[in-house]
Image 1 (tube, rainbow, N blue to C red):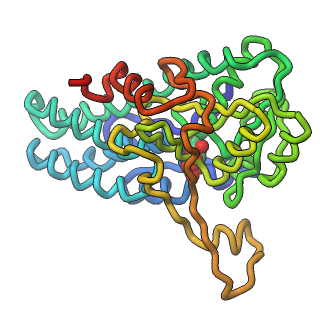
Image 2 (cartoon, rainbow, N blue to C red):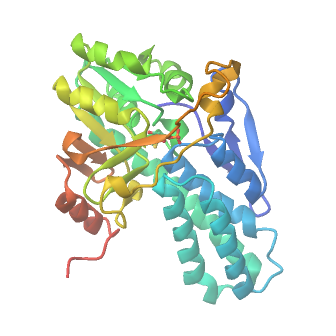
Length: 360
Ligand SMILES: CSC[C@H]1O[C@H](OP(=O)(O)O)[C@H](O)[C@@H]1O
């Protein structure tokens, strides 16, 4: 598995989060110490830390950063302050549901334990422990998704992935890349095509960096080449991550994922989405209701230092798209697979996982 630790918490209370500064990869491996809420909001917005599960873990630590130096407040006042902190963190990016799920979990935990906390420091200690549980659970979920997903991978297969859904996108070994790491641990020889994934090149910069470090054969292709390698019959399966999955099984993921799904359907290539239950959004009925982040034009006009679009020419930069459930062969979760996902199957999973009220 990859040796990379996307995020760690340094010290106990009055500690700080330490992130790999992903905007500098692959040229430089540097770390960013985040000591306050504005710093965590900025790190999430800039994609210094990115990927739905990693954003959730970062947000949980961000909540701790926001209250750990306010422990002189009364517990009720600290709970109110925590609400403000979580609202600030929630504004960092709109699409990955893990951000909101993690913040709601931190607030729920605070409310549940507040009555037993003698003072603000006791509450802060409880929140740090909860953030560390969020992190540890994510790592465990990654391993379990990897094991379920590896059953879909045979020795000698060539896989394709889009964006980065590896260790750098999670608190563990990844989502879409986890089955690849586990398959490699099992001795299966695999090769991977990594879509470079414009405009921020998470595939070229991050996925290839991770897989290469893990000794897994990886070739970077431009996004426009995905169709060609499938036409040539060179892709046995696609594995991608997700930022939010609606109740009907529609999958929101990095821009370009829908294109890969259509190509996979056209060429009879299985299209697998790997995501923990925390990425499912029971409150969103279908993919067309998922908020799609639009990012700065400069990511396209001046990507990586060169102007490639004439001054005054317009740009449209949606960071995500939605793949309809009918194009998804299966969703791989920590609880197993949902094949041919639909609302009934997603709701059954959410109820099994306790993420949705039992049917009345
Ligand atoms: C395991 S979720 C990874 C997911 O997040 C990425 O988006 P971003 O790099 O903008 O955070 C992309 O959608 C990946 O599939």
